[in-house]
Length: 193
Image 1 (spheres, rainbow, N blue to C red):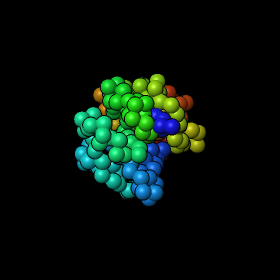
Image 2 (image 1 turned 90 degrees about the vertical axis):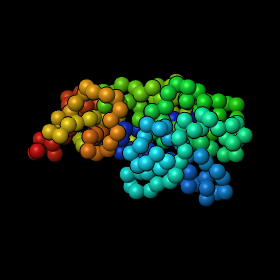
Image 3 (image 1 turned 180 degrees about the vertical axis):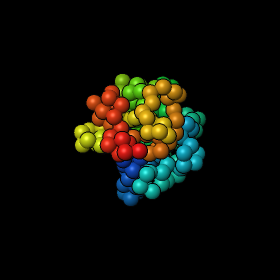
Image 4 (image 1 turned 135 degrees about the vertical axis):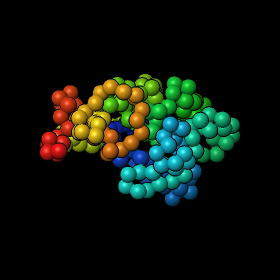
């Protein structure tokens, strides 16, 4: 039975690496998994999904998936969406359609919340409609579970205003537990700077 999965986690929780491993597992067993990402994610090129650990694979854009015919989509055994937080409601509705009408499982990976600890649009609808919701874990500098994505400036100060989307990695973001997020405490390494 096909299902819509939403695997969310803070930055650095190996979401992209897991997505690429799942695609590899399908391929290794003679199955076809379609890798997809939203057009918003251009960090590693338009048609590439790359993990921080260096593994990468070609993909198509979510916007292209919207243009595909049902017969084309049905040639795949699974659809894997990276950076799903950048999807809009209509795109998440398409993913639900693929599961419910075409009987193809869809596995989405993404952030739940932004640097203000507010939901992204895609994440909100995936949380509402996914059949299976799984948290991918990572840790704060203190050792507690990190569920918050903190954005910081060049002075090592946490910032909580600005555009929701600022593409980047460790140069702009770190992950924190909720306590340290609300304290604005990026950890002892920042106090030394």
